[in-house]
Amino acid sequence: MGSKAHALLEGLTRWWGSKRVATTADFESMAVILLSGKGEASGVALASHLLAAYAALPRTQQRRFFELLATRFGPNLATVRDAVADFMQAPDAESAARLHVVAEPRRQELVRRMNLAPRGTSQLVRMREDLLTTMKDDPSLALVDADFRHLFASWFNRGFLSLQRIDWSTPAHILEKIIRYEAVHEITSWDDLRLRLEPPDRRCFAFFHPALSGEPLIFVEVALTNEVPSSIASLLGSSRTPVTPDRATTAVFYSISNCQPGLRGISFGNFLIKQVAEDLKRELPALNTFVTLSPLPGFRRWLSAIRGENGGSPVEAAMASALAEIDRPNWQSSASRVLRDALSRAAVRYLFDAKDAAGKPLDSVARFHLGNGARLERVNWMGDAGEKGLTQGAGFMVNYLYDLAAVERNHEAFANQGEIVASADVHRLRRTLETRPG
Image 1 (cartoon, rainbow, N blue to C red):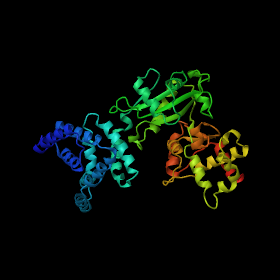
Image 2: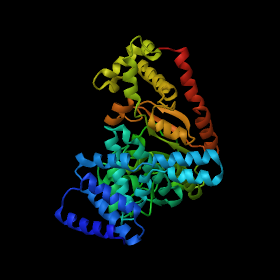
Image 3: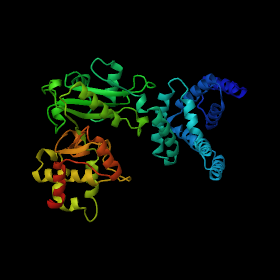
Image 4: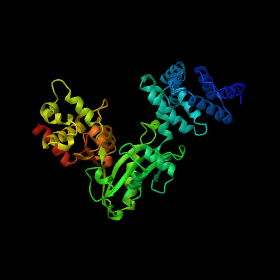
């Protein structure tokens, strides 16, 4: 260990004992020496100190750490310019490789070295969670997030993940996390969890990573049935009659929950659904249908927005009187057939025509499943009549069908042409937008 590293570590030991909050200069000194150090032992110690100093920061002061990464640990632009000039003079593989090396921001290597610390990966995942929160007030930090995302995409590559079944015999500390992280249909108690795990026609699977011991990354809950369900109550009702697994024909993915906010944007769900479907097919050969029962979380917000447009959209102009009914308290208990038809047509328009800035479906759940190669199979009136379902999706739930023989073809059509593959029933309902305005 060099003399600077020795001196810094001694200073850090004194600083840590004093419990003083680290300054920006402290962080910069630690980062510079961590990047310049060669010894593994000193690197581990210094990385541990740096992460501990960050963890001790009050939330209101985390921003200055990320600003330091953004402003002081980017690429050396003068070196990049020289490398670009070298490449232009001799555009060969060697000069391209040099350009690639010098163009990498120094903060990427800093994050790699912080990962040397014990439990460094889990601490960095939490650090990115803080960064995502901070970015809401400071979009300029997106450059720092891009580096985290780049590294995490490699560290959490599918090859490093293990798929494990979650059942009633799973250790309690993991079951507690399943209760805590369930994001679609709240698990209200241990008895509620037991009803989702213990019956023979229920399955739950999660991805785990060796660096995050005991921490699920994402999990999916599955119901084995003999039909494609139209409502969540039919799956979660306590009085239902369980299906004998080897006689089930349909696997229903009714809840998918991400467990690590710091891994947002790192895709696991597409691998999870496809692998679970393949594993279930091997276990239970009678299964021939793999389908979701999914929420429509952005529908009500979108509906409110288009109803407020001046001049009126086609949906607003044609259906305004019917759609106004949903403004009444407890509107669903006395909804008219006209309202049901109007909302169903509006839901289909939302799924097909409402787009985000990238031209993809505005609805996050639709974007996920259609991007995975699923087919838009059916929209279900009052699929979720609970408070959350009514508030977010006007009660609608959607079936997305995973035809294992067609998912790659559907994915390519969606990714390359923006095509939404849908069933004949959905297309029939969509045509009523043109032929039956209200």
